[in-house]
Length: 287
Image 1: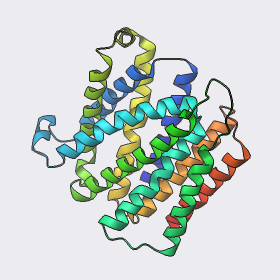
Image 2: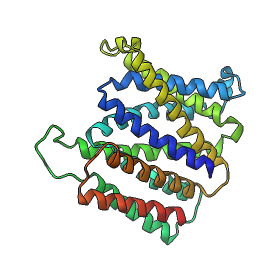
Image 3: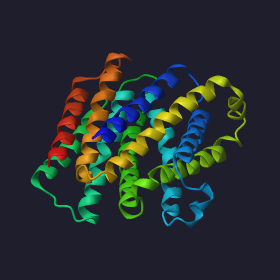
């Protein structure tokens, strides 16, 4: 249970840090890239394995795929937190829990109970209502406040499913730090590949503030994945229950943070969506 609690705190911290970075109007791309360097270094320190041995691991192709997806969707989280808000971004990304649950049912032959079916339907309704926006003529006009959370919904669900598959197939507890570090190393080099050719990003790597936020984000980001993998390995409960408890905690804590600390405003429809999302994840957790 302690791993789930630590994963909840770490994952919520990511959204809060993104919100703060956006409020300071800092370039998020170099911060994200530095964060993955820091996270990878933490994993190397915690792992007893030699980094050069990674080429012999059978999970290496999956680490590469997940690592590239990590940084892509980290960018999307940062943009969505700014455009759609921390509450909606969090709910949309974490309601993607229904995707790894469906994956577990189909691939690992878990039983699809009536409670899980109800939870999945509530989750889909919750995502729609949470990201719903009336057409208004303002600077955030357009499809992006709706489209970005929906992209996160699909993308984060796909990432969680890949993590579940890799963890169940290849990763033992003693290699969780090693695997996590490898993921982040791939993400770091992907970030360099994207940012270094662009003139507007290169000077950012010389700024202390960029490195400070990259350092903070790196510690929190590493914890979110490391603790989740350990929770899945701990046999505390079925993976669907672990994902459910983890995601409902992140949703509740992040939404409360967005409303109470950052004074984000949400409509009645959005509130119903958030409530539906919480009920959905609770239902899935108890299924």
